[in-house]
Length: 258
Image (cartoon, rainbow, N blue to C red; front, side, top):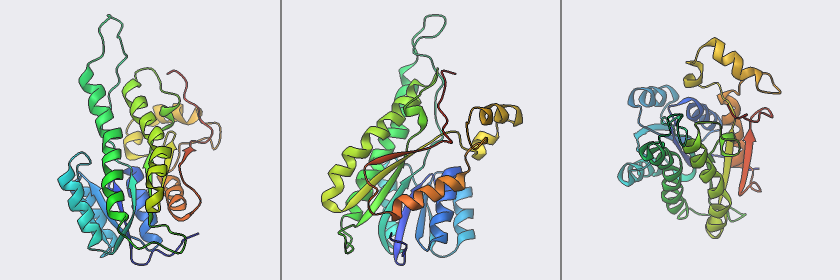
């Protein structure tokens, strides 16, 4: 297990959000420098200021090569970029393929959702991997690792989740192929598929809905903690034999149709 992050840098997309912030904190605690790549300037800058000199905020649109490249350059100014975590989000549509009136779902919502979650993930993987491939390998030949974020909706998409489920299923499918592509560069790829996590956005639904969501989880009988996601990401980045795998983090939850 590699637990020495001295001189290493990670780039975390969505790093100012619930799962991303937990990941940033876990990485900083482990000794890694971090770039918070996000669009929320206020939260990103506040988190970077709180965590100190080894953390930077970089305003980043995951679909815009220029801002991603700038975030990569910021990471390289802190040390050797070896890791990336894609935990960005913030958009989704709830459309049936055909609604009760017989109207087909708008294509725009599907395309935008897939664009953010799948295309955005791929864009980070390809651009960060190219930068990491220039790093010196360790004694095992590893140069770094990338952790992406899917969802258990990739396996059990619910009614109205076609766009989100398809996007996250794409992230799942990307995992092994990308791991194989990047094996020659010594870069591992691992995917985490969370269930229902207690992020600030999820908490905003109110206590009644939260109780309903918690009741659907077999054990532990609660929503997942962002810190548990961060801990799993940290393990994936440090376990050198974990590669090309998708790990569910869901308390044995399986989504029903609704």
